[in-house]
Length: 127
Ligand SMILES: [Zn+2]
Image 1 (cartoon, rainbow, N blue to C red):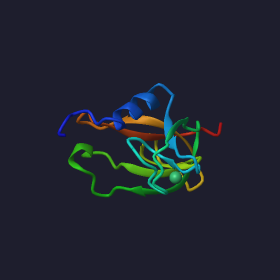
Image 2 (image 1 turned 60 degrees about the vertical axis):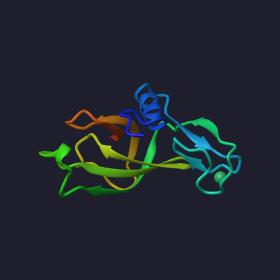
Image 3 (image 1 turned 30 degrees about the vertical axis):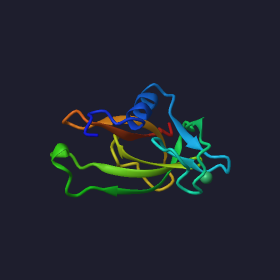
Image 4 (image 1 turned 180 degrees about the vertical axis):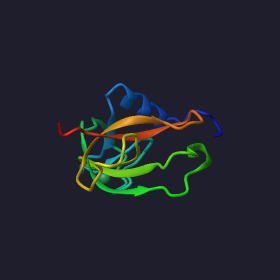
């Protein structure tokens, strides 16, 4: 514990960065994100790795009015989007003017000013 690199989560970020994002699926089709040993919905431990859909649909989003110190000077917008059977929570890396519920987003890796990496979302241009 206390390692800089989080097993599973950082692997996922690496995969998203190279456009090979994935999620875990149990035999019943419940999706979850690594790191997981068992399905969080039904407890099955027979998890397989499935490719993450290219785009997701924004379910809701929140503007963080009082950001963490690492985001000083920014007003992060966090979006929650459905990617097939999994739901990703990520920071919007684009301007939020065009963002609305139902917007299409692609997963990406966002970097905070202190160098930390986390899941991000980029709006799919309709042009
Ligand atoms: Zn399951």
